[in-house]
Length: 244
Figure 1 (tube, rainbow, N blue to C red):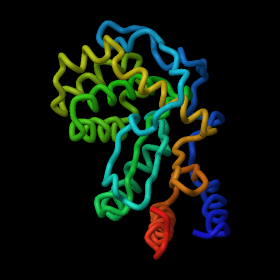
Figure 2 (figure 1 turned 45 degrees about the vertical axis):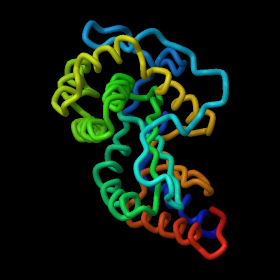
Figure 3 (figure 1 turned 30 degrees about the vertical axis):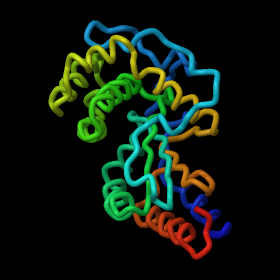
C-alpha cells in the first residue's frame, strides 16, 4: 500500500465511528489502573487491583489469536466491549473479514480488549470473557459473541455479574473454574497489561486496528473499505521479494 493510499484510508477512517473520550455514551470514570477492577461483588469479584508489570509488555501472550501464525499479514485490534462502534464492527464487518482473510490463511488476527474507562461495566465483561478464554478458545468465541450481541443487557445493568455468569454457564464453561478465575483475579493482569499497551501506543478511541507495518486505523471502517486495506496489505506482503 502506498503512502498516498494509507493517507486516504486514514482520512476516510475519521469519517466513520470510533468511541472516544468525548463519546456521548461514555461515563466519567477514574482512568487509573485501579479503575480496571470494580468493587468486589459476592458473585463476581475480580480481585484487588494490581499495577501493570514494569517490564516490557509481551504482546504475544495477550488477547485472543485467530488464524494461522504463518499468515503474511498480521492485525492487532483494540476494542472495548462497551463501545457501540466496536459492536457494530463485530456484528457487521468481522464475519466477512474472518471468512475472507483469517480463515483463508491470509491474515492472523489478534483481538486485544482495551478497557478504556469510558463504559460502565466494561471491566466486568472483559474479565468474564477472559475467564472463559482461560478454559477454551471455542467457548470464548461463543461468550465473545454473546457479550457483543447483547451489549445493552450487561452494560446498562446495575448488577452485571449474574448476567455474565449466566452466559458463561450457557456457553458450556466450567463454572467452578470460572468463579475461581474471577475470585483469584487470574486474568486481571492480562487485562491490565493489554490496556497499558493500548495507552503506550497512543490508542484513544475504539476500535483501533494496527495492520502490522502500517499506520494505525481508528474507527469501524465499512466492510468494503477494510477489505481494500487487507487486500493491499496482503498483495504487498506476498509480492516477489517482499520481506517475511
